[in-house]
Image 1 (cartoon, one colour):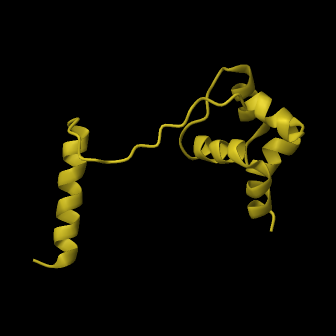
Image 2 (spheres, rainbow, N blue to C red):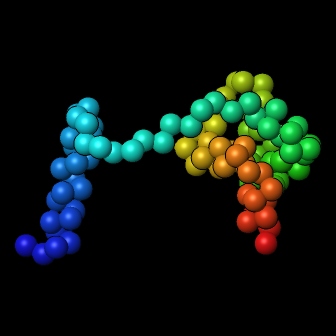
Length: 95
């Protein structure tokens, strides 16, 4: 069998073991909760500016700030990065 097949086979085996709850040494990213309103205010942006800067609808941002919803998936990753270093993220997005 080819190396590619063996690699795919191994990956699938590990995915199944992980799904079954076995410890396979995988690193999990578990971001902490983010106070979106506090983050936005620390950066010094209005809701409109923040939403536009990070590609979020204003409606979604308002739901997050009220606590009706919480950011998930890629949005949560982006906001985690923004929280850690907003200037760098803004520079990357607008350079």
